Length: 344
Ligand SMILES: *Cc1c(COP(=O)(O)O)cnc(C)c1O
Image (spheres, rainbow, N blue to C red):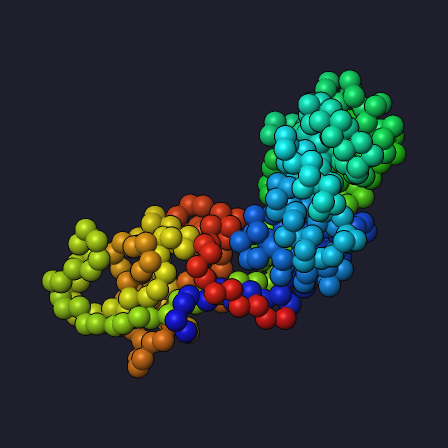
């Protein structure tokens, strides 16, 4: 191994989709934005289509192009960001369904691509994307006359099942859409776990497919294995890395491995992360460099070829937790320099 390897278990990905699908009586789509949460949108979408996903969601139109190439011409791909100025060509050519977020987008879409499929995104309280209730009231009749493919909204607090915001948004979404006669979607991963009231006609999980919280029962999808470039003995009193921020208090065997903050291993992990040589925990020493990490492998007997930063002993959420972030950020931040190795 010359390059750090990101192992992606497509079998676990498919199993997670099936497990989330089994929790509902409705269609389960798949959110594959941000390059399939960093894992490779094409491979991920293809594997999910084979598992049974019949509908995909991306954040921006350009992301839809790669997904379209992977899944072929037939399955719908929706764009959360809607119809942005200048996107008409991409939306038409890749056959994307923009989720229109405002009257401005609705007007743009109807003018640029009359008759082209679209959906509607409503704001049920998160105040991030979607038409406000009064805005929707002003255009609902015109929009519904054009038969939207889907009406959706998004929950702000679905990862906290007891949060009162959930029932509040549910009530608002119902008020805005009851009787519309159009398929509806409210739930991402968190909403799937909230139960049937939240499922409507379609769910659109992302993070749970990739093995992340709040889907605690998810199978792990990712293992990140980083090769050792060299090892050395660091004697008591010597320092390691930039800023001399680590000083050995005893003789240590230190491995220098080939990944760093340019690969999404945030500098905030300096002196805090643990890597694994098989079952042996090995602390990160000193600062994270751009392309390198220095690891105490004194506890390992014999040669060390590679260390795992993400794996069976430490999932993406556990690693994220070390620096107070979330699995979503950890996964999507993993850079382009890894060799992505897919297994079925
Ligand atoms: C990202 C996103 C999803 C998927 O969310 P997860 O929490 O990853 O399941 C669903 N809907 C919208 C609007 C999103 O932005």
